[in-house]
Image 1 (cartoon, one colour):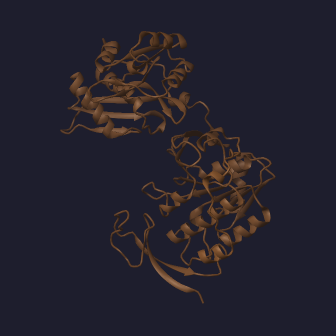
Image 2 (cartoon, rainbow, N blue to C red):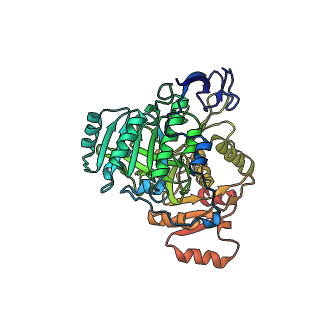
Image 3 (cartoon, one colour):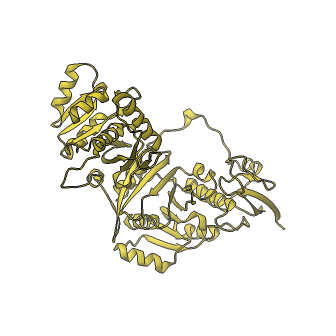
Length: 464
């Protein structure tokens, strides 16, 4: 008879305790512990004691110099955005976690991925939808694939039996929170179930060299549901985000053992599925007929990709005693820092003004190089003078009012030139103090490159 064990788990971070605790010692959250019954069953073929493994000769240490370094062959998909976010394609044996809000399009994106993989046996395991529902979505996507197989099951035992028969080259699990293993008595979605089922899928991926995609839910706080260890176990964590009222979705890399963690993929939700957006700068800049104040274009970088984004600012007289500071897609503390610089170094009185700032297109930007565009948008709204629509900005602003250099300036200038901008304002320190460097930069591009070192120079150039 199997031995029963009761443990208490924190629903926020997965911390395990032998007794109930009011406050979690790991994440400091209150009233998050729930009791779960765990069955320790020695018949689990996935688990062996370290003595059994040693006796079977399964454990063997090896010198690092004996390991042969071979370049990993990646599986390229037809989705260029997903290839970029994964670091150049799907790595065999990798386990990838994708999280996002309900209804954002996770299932659609990865059903589309599986149907696109021609001559690759793909198994789509759904614990949430029936076969008819998935078929209806596939018909809406107008795609067919003879190598695409469906399995509507939640038990890991049954899933692994079907995998053994089919021997798929790619496995997609929708979703990890619906799976359950018979070796744990708690219900699906509990901390112990998510941890154990993810561990079984991880062992399968590494032993068979099969890539596994895990679609995950998120909590009301925006974190991935389940224990924090889930994010440590997987090789790649992707966040699928965007406002459901807008057509655009952003696939962002949060963790990647095989590539950059700052890559970004942009999709457009259409009637026929997720359409990759190859040139996002065009959709992030509003096409308008009239020149409006408070709008500036920033040349930013997301990973290796240059983007031109529109920064919108509105400065108005404060009606109430305390002025408002409202931002969307930008760091509020960074905005307060830039306002302090304008107050101290420029003599502008923002203390009695309401300030609203928005990054168009629903993007969230952390690149400090958009400081210059934010500052120019604020000044444009403050003076109520529109900026030249054919000029863009790339520079970080320091506390003393200096315009600091930013990285990858060549790619930013090239992207601005490609989109038809006539001028770009950058830091003087990006090209050094030598005049010959500036001449080379001017000869290299057809766009006019203007270099400045102080915020005061920028204000005189734009508004006087």
